Image 1 (spheres, one colour):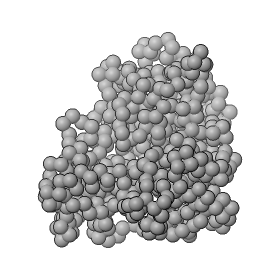
Image 2 (tube, rainbow, N blue to C red):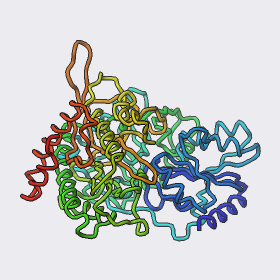
Image 3 (spheres, one colour):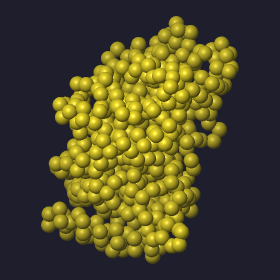
Image 4 (cartoon, rainbow, N blue to C red):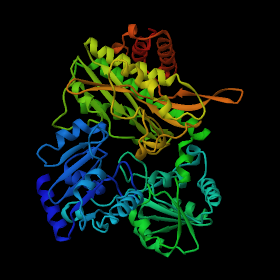
Length: 596
């Protein structure tokens, strides 16, 4: 099927004089996760991971993806004729380096300019224009092949009440306008969906698990133009928007709208977030300020109302996780449980809480060697039965009106090897060390990452991903600009100074292909600690509460402070979670939060 699609794509390319065609994972908004309509890269390659880029030439094809998906991609690309390029690995060409090798003067490089960022498009235009290579960006060639392509999303939107958001849309617009004035900007184009959702306190269901609305915003110092499918908006939303000067326009109208921006205007936009078509439609005599959207940092620093809601939310989420662990540990081997049925059970428990309206991502329920694939997703073909042996990794989260959660636990279902115990305990030690960090204000995630990796590096193990990412508030589970990783990855944009109020996950892991995978994840709130002289110290508050499976822990590998932290953490788990459990569950939890 993939080979046939590639053949048809190449015929279309040849007819249009195109030598190379780029198919990224993005939608028209540079979203990390996309709706079914936008899954062109999956359609053309068969690779289902969330991140990756396909380049097809008239005689070759390649897929670039990161370390989370190496094993998965190798399996899914078999017999496709598409080569896997493992991003970040030594000696592996980047997309740009590959294009440098295959493109020659007179060739045409093409892509759909709506799914390529202005930053990428401008880079290609500058680099290849100088080499006599033509850039074409008006074709969606995959659409020509995709006969049963899903429709554009049309889910209804809703307003997020201020009792959850903690700040009105009107006040948020004022804050952004103040930033515009500081930069002498008169127009701001906002095209990233989570930024728009945060700014207007609007949420939706246009992308699975990401409560956003497919839309764009152009704002001036006194007006907001909101480009959206109006059928998604109820009367309450329309009336609310009317009061704060938000004018509703058709979703696709933005491309013509920006053509009318006057030459005396100054436009603020982020080239990494605005698509190339929008950028190219702005008149050439208009001044453009290419800077990070003000909303990017604003939404990452949670206000006190959001934080209070989040703390409550994590207890509710922790109750579901704890009940799941009890059910799993007491029933495995006694009833049939599979990766998928375990995942379904956890979702059922989460949705018992009335404020939970969705999951925050597709649950990863991975048994034994399946867990070595960081983002494994069980299918009917791969779904396997859990036995009272080995380990089950469960990475999951919920969308609540009070917050967004992300938690991973690795459960011990029976006997495990000494090697697995070493790996499990080393992963736990890394998670604990980062949780305990005290650091000076001004530190970034890159300064602290070694705390999590250290115990694993000591035994010669690394994991091919970051240690943690920011989390949105009733928004995307992955959010910049904060994160933990050992080196700067520019396209991730997650290496900012850690600010008070930022939420970041802490999730080191071990992934041994063909054997096992282990990950333990809590969320951390960055907050101020003591100030000594002019030195402001910072620390983390753990806001995730669910037992860490002590059956995988060998205390002999841990030092005194690590054991003390784990014991204190488990004491808190028991205090916060036990009031919501029945008598048998409480008795069980007491055992699984015992001091070691």
